[in-house]
Length: 250
Image (cartoon, rainbow, N blue to C red; front, side, top):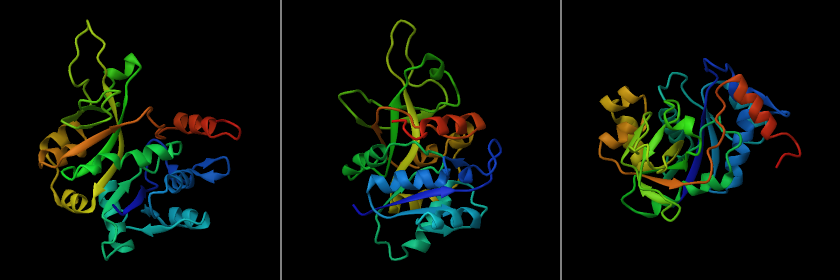
C-alpha cells in the first residue's frame, strides 16, 4: 500500500466558529492534528482546506495545504478534490481521512486504520473503541458500530452503524457496545466510487454518511483501538483539549 493522509478542514462550524484556527498552547488546532498525522509516518500528509486562512496556518507550520471549493457537502468530497490536485497520477492507492478536529488522536491509532485493508475484499477501513460509560450506550451523539469485535478479535466486518445502541443487549448481561471513531482509510477506487454515489435512505435517516457505502455493497471493516480521541466541537471540548495538551501533561 502507498498511503496518503488527507485532513479535511473548514472554518464554518455552528458550535465553535473558526475552530481549525483555535489556539492550543501557541499552535492552531489544525497544526496539532497535522503533527499527529505526520507522527503516524504512513506517507505524505496534506490538509484539504476550504479557506485561505487555514492554508496559511498550515503552510506557516511547514505543512502542505490544498485549497478546495468551500461548498463541498462532506469531508469525503473535499479530500477527493484535494487528492486530484495533489496526486493526479494516482500514485497513492490508499487515502487516510483524519478529521481536523482530533488534536489528541494517538498516531498509533491512525496507523491502526490500515490493518483491515490487509484483506483485499475490504474497501474502507475505520476504527472503534469499547464503550465503558453507561450513559454513552443510549446517547445518540455516540455513534455505534455493530461488528463482532472483542479483545481477541481486533478487526471485524462492520454490519451496521447507528445512533441507537446496536447490537441489542439485554439488561441481564453486560455485552460490550462499540463507539465508532470517524477516521477512515479508503482504497482510492473506493473513495472515487463513494463520492459519486447519491445519498442513501438510511444515511439520511441516521445522518451517518458511512451507511451510503454499506447500502451500495461496499465492505467496511473496523479495527479496535483502546480509546476514543477527543473530538473538538464546543468551547468546553476546546478547554479539555488545552488541558490534555498542556506542556508536561503525558
